[in-house]
Image (cartoon, rainbow, N blue to C red; front, side, top):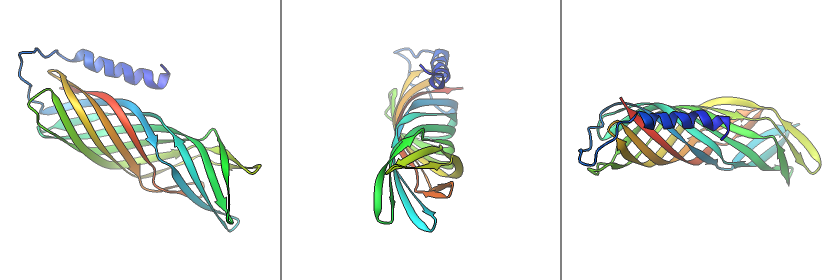
Length: 225
């Protein structure tokens, strides 16, 4: 396990270790109150398009991104059917390849050392669907601030190499989630969820990029105080 995953996984294990077991003959406790949440998984971003002008010539590019680590951590309050959360979310991906077009010509671009990541602070609300059991499906989403970091890279098209300077920009971010949680103990849930995250468009080094979006999945836990 690499260092990027080791500490979050240890935190998830500790969260479950603090939980008090729920006996088979006990009723499902009232979930209302404050809780901490931690989720770990992966995300798979969609293709991103970008446009710029070089010496007066419009240039466009289409970039294929590879999946990477995704995680979030935060705190929330459970009102019963509805929960609210404030979370920090991180997604990492690689720029695998691209296709550059200009003056009616286009060519594949070999990308070297390209990467993209997002750091988000999101306020979310979720509806827990009552089942009178330990299994609780939920749906919800949130909005907030996302800082998009577009890594520097070199791209070679038809033997010509161009360099993209690294940069970042803060933009509007949002997410939607569909998940299933399980009451593993009196004060702890475990959950599995599907996630869709997106941003508005952003600009780096005079290149205007379309909105960044990704699909993801997370396994996590909530600890209730």
